[in-house]
Length: 79
Image (tube, rainbow, N blue to C red):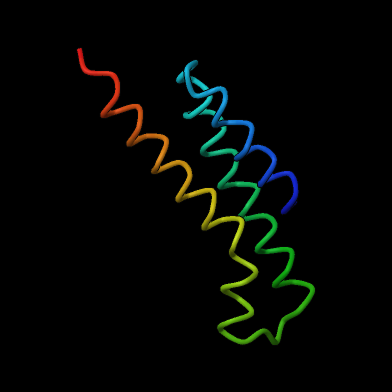
C-alpha cells in the first residue's frame, strides 16, 4: 500500500493540468495511506508514538500533496 500511495502521488503531479486528477487521486491517496497505516498498526500493536508516526507517513504525504496541489490550482487558475 505504501508503494502504491507514493506512486499515485508522483503520478498526480504530471497530470495536474487535467485538474480532475487532483480531486480523484487526492482522496484515493489518503484512503490508501490510511489503509497502509491501519495495516501496520494491526501487525504491530505495541508501536510507540514514533512508530505510529512512521507508519502514517503515506497518509501524511498524501494529505500534504493534496493540499499543495489544491493550492497550486487555486492560485494558478484565476478567472
